[in-house]
Amino acid sequence: MGRLRAMREPLKYVQGRDALLKFQEEMGYMGKRWLFVCSRSGYKACYDKIEKSFGDKNDYRRYEIFAGISSKGEIAKMEKIVKEDEIDTVVAVGGGSAVDTAKATAYYTGKHIVIIPTVAATDAPCTGLSVIYNDDHSFDKYLFYPTNPDAVMVDSTVIANAPVKFLIAGMGDALGTYFEGRASIRTESASLEGTGITRAGQALARLCYDTLVTYGKQAVEACKVHAVTPALEAIIEANVYLSGVGADNVNCAAAHSFYNGVTSLGIAHADHGCCVALGTLVQLVLEGASKEEFKEVQDFCLEVGLPVTLEEIGVTTQEQVKTIAENACVPGETIHNLAGDVQPIELYDAILQTDAMGKIALGKTE
Image (cartoon, rainbow, N blue to C red; front, side, top):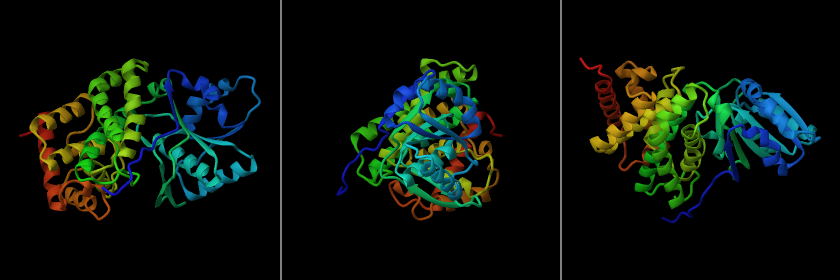
């Protein structure tokens, strides 16, 4: 217990219907010269609103469509633009790779950073790290920042008009926040940022789960018809803010290690959030959770369309399960935040039980 407790979060979080129409009003204090690092879809979804927010102001705005991955070369290209154009603030517009590229660019050039997510598929917008790749698309490193973003602005209309699969995936990622945090607290592990865990972090993680269970199904139906409703607003906040700030200030455990194990199989459609949701069920089995708690979480997954079996994430053989278990338990993985020293065979068995119970829930048993 020698660690200092700490809280990390964006300095400002703004969310709402057509929020981008107030971009300049909300973010104008950061300067007059702006670089927008955009995905192609992000540019199409947000450009008109952002431009309208500036009205007759003569702020300098430059929009760059980035190459699709947060590579060292792409970041260097954006750094050069920041210096040559004397940019005050870098703004990410898009999904995870655009966010990671913009964060790194702002960090290396010492500029302000604003995040505009166009999907609520992960909690990356609020966190203080980026995943960096080499120019050949191979993994390079996790880049940890001393602070979280200056601001995050979420236009709920943009999220409502994105495919509903992204919202569902975001709920899967958010689902692990409370249970992984709870496990980390039990073992007195450090937070994701390496500090002691605060009561505020614990409370946000719990609120994240309660929000998912209360509003998840309604939000899915709202997103299907592109409607911005209180339920959708609640789930956007849970996916982006409560999950991001919650996870940063507690930690991950078996659910995210399970995802990392799945990625070792090279399955192209193994979505992060969907794997984390199934991994949360696996973690509950590992922990010996009561049948009531397991069923509550499994029922939530079924209700919103998250996977409860291996087949749903493309895993079909026991050899694949063994590979997942071995890679999820390597030294340094967050599964070791669980009580006890989880061994690959224990995880392997927990995965098989989770899958078996999922098949029963889906009525797929022989």
